[in-house]
Length: 204
DNA sequence: AAGTAGATGTTCT
DNA sequence: GAACATCTACTTA
Image (cartoon, rainbow, N blue to C red; front, side, top):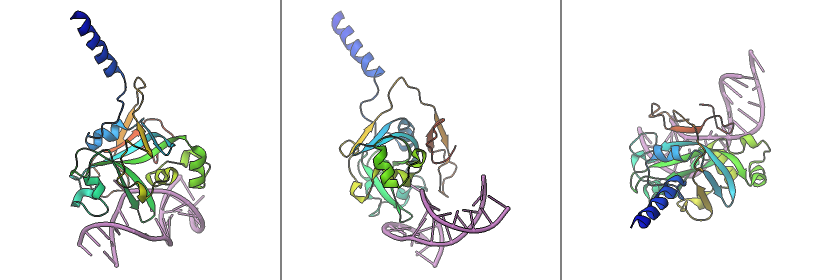
């Protein structure tokens, strides 16, 4: 009995000290946006460390989902852990992670990465050599990772996506601030970034 | 360094 | 018609 309890205690301790194996997409948008800082995102093996995110929620007027589902925003109202992809200003493809529960219209916009995998592919897609500018902004992330409408609604837990939590034991200092490029709900500090990163779209 | 024009799908007024 | 979860190229100081 004693041995058994020690056994379970050891498993529990190991479980708790180990980083979560999968991202908790059931979290609400600000919690997920914060948790994603330091995580690694790859699409077909190309990507890097997430250094900047923004949270959005259907309850709040800056979100595309705020006025209910439309053909464009349908994925935001689907199950968490899937991709919501939209065309920004008719030109750029931007990637979001749907979260919370189906029906809430909650998601996290991936705003910037520190490139770590497939640098040559990203440079070719972006027509640029400056590593610092490869993924420093949501439109740039979309172009560097080859995001298109084909990724709309896909699961983030299956290929071509590969999302891994930040390694435990490496403390990440997360900055917060107002979201960029919005006119509604500017008071919400729902932009999150990795302190000291040179790959942010803009300083905090 | 800072400002502006222009590219243009989706949605709303 | 206007606004928009943006980026680039180009102008002006």
